[in-house]
Length: 235
Ligand code: 3PG
Image 1 (cartoon, protein in one colour):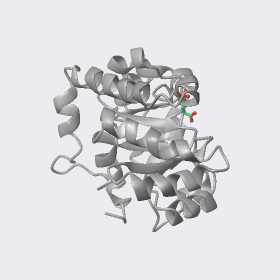
Image 2 (spheres, rainbow, N blue to C red; image 1 turned 90 degrees about the horizontal axis):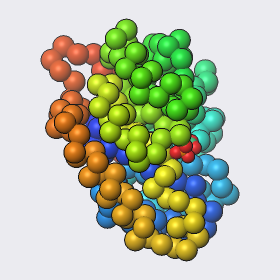
Image 3 (cartoon, helix red, strand yellow; image 1 turned 90 degrees about the vertical axis):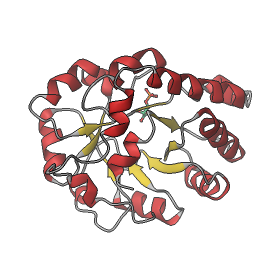
């Protein structure tokens, strides 16, 4: 599966900050039950990689990525514990030269950053932080001059914003932490997490663009897809 196919396979990537290792599996299971199998576990807690390892082992229907990646070493460690993709808030020269790795979704916030990442082979990018960068209107503006870049906007996105982002022609999915509210996690309210995931899926399915979005993962005849070069080596 290419990174582009992965992004188009599910409308939302929940962004997870896991503080308690024993929460990792029930949290991931609730999100998968709700219909969101693509998960980003951020490297912001000491147990993040252990959490990834556990989810990979015990929740086989999840596609687990590692987020907040800043260095090549972060990606190597993510690979070692079985992550299938990596997400970064930006793109550094060492990260852009990384080869033979799990696919990387780099962050970009300006047209120059988007073009620089595209030239480095990244046709799929995370617009970050999306709400400060200009949100859905900014993505629409980018679609004119840079139509061949596919985005997963992340940062400041909430449930109410979903329809607008998902209606953009260059958005495959969005990322966000609203599916795992801190108070629900503290109560271990996994039903609430599942409900939020299911609601996001229902909103996405209500979009007039839902069918065409899921159909646009495959490059059209003659369409260049540099993202395909980042083939997922684990599948
Ligand atoms: C992040 O890296 O924290 C993500 O962008 C999630 O942002 P959010 O908490 O605003 O959804």
